[in-house]
Image 1 (cartoon, rainbow, N blue to C red):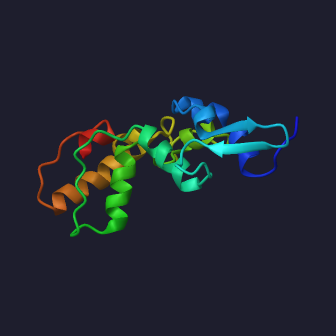
Image 2 (cartoon, one colour):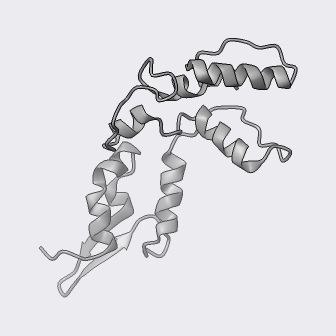
Length: 155
């Protein structure tokens, strides 16, 4: 069998990732053989040509989005809004998450309190240091302080 370099070969390598998103490899590309040649066609475009954009659109369509009422306010700096949105989605790379991804970390213990394993909720709201910072900010804003144990409770 003739192997094709480049895109088609790479798409075949991500078959498992496509399947996780319920995208069939045969919907992305298929091989048509006639007596003189083999022709590869992409099922994502009307003309049969492959485009990264078409696959990305299909991928994004199949990827679940976070069901939230997150509001992007222009008065809040974009940096703060992005961080808050990522925290709500659980996408801030804590030491625990980095370790799961194969990144070497010296210790899984929180570097601020050195009490328990660092995870997103602990780092941002449950750590004694984070609690002290949060209470200071809320006091400065003249907002009644509450106890939070999860990131989503604080938002």
